[in-house]
Length: 257
Image (cartoon, rainbow, N blue to C red; front, side):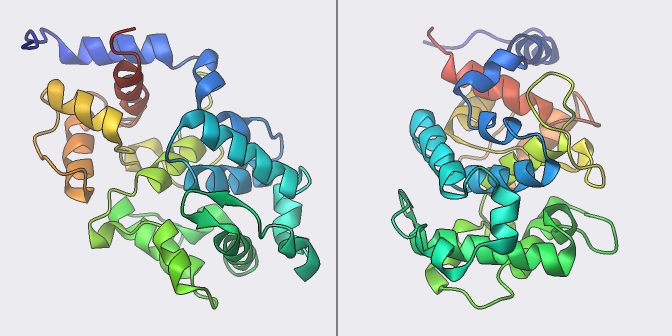
């Protein structure tokens, strides 16, 4: 069935954002895991790990993210900083799709490296206090994340836009950390990266809906598509284009309901 023309696309997206960007959105979304922590450092760490495994069924993602919390004894940041070799060993059985215990141990060690060498996750994206474009900041982060020795297999779990990846999960993590906590969804913990710097976390739902609405022409879900879609959304809100990620995602998953 051919979709009818959209008379006012911005009004449609603004309405969807207003309806869906509410606290009940997180009830079925992995963002509930970092939102359950009071300390910024805990939310940053578990948010990054949760975003890293955020592919597949959302119920499974949430269950496995909660398992990560349990493995770190409810204190993700303290675990990153102080876990002994024996404590790291108990991570070995963890598996989420292709992300396994070996990857998880490396992620803990790399997060420890970022904490000691770069003062934390946000700073690891920055150069002289500035993020610049996400096309530059994300590869910079990946390079720093893997400065220490690591298994070659683990590198695939941190995306790189310079290689064409849409970096969906890391863009989603950045949205969680950067967008304001004014709707009870995102956390708004980071201030040196601003909402206008963010790029859309492109997945099958947002991509399909964006193409149906004429916001995205490119067929591949790659970094060029991310740039195209984010550019289209900036025409509606230059200061916070990625707020419409919530709208596009919700329209996609609720289609036909």
